[in-house]
Length: 225
Image (cartoon, rainbow, N blue to C red):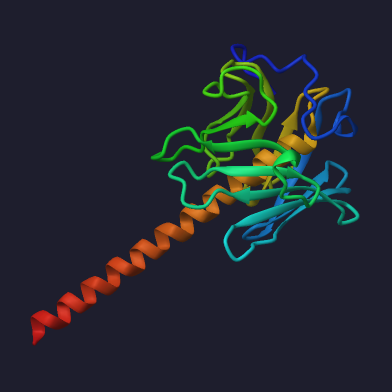
């Protein structure tokens, strides 16, 4: 899982709940069913979690569900923020007292990167220092989640092959390898937010292209008059 200069975590990491800890390394498969919908299963294809959109009038939202469709956390986009921030709440709550952690892009402008900073709601250290971070490229499926501002990994994303005999990568499926004693529901929530950020960025980019195209057409018509 790890390169020589990137050590996997040996610490216990429990953010959403101790029931989501495994004493061994855990490999899970994330399948993008459609925009905003993720299906998460173990290597034996047993469903563990689902992520679904649950947008409100004012906010883009996602909900993490267990295999029985019980809500574990709700992810809510912070409206009108340059860093594309997200709040994460326990269960289906939106109360500040139930907020678990927040995220934001590391930089406002990130070309070909998906770097995200994660801040725990009950943090006691400096508010400017992240508790976890994501580095890498979501589009290349090589994102890694680290503890704080360190090189200690807690999870790593990687591409999946379509079969053992055919060297062909599956675009809508990828694997996440999670270190022992690391909250796998927490890891999946971070992955879901990274996916949501990229989906939102694509929508915004498409909208800008359409506006520019419309303006170009209008200018062309004016010049012909």
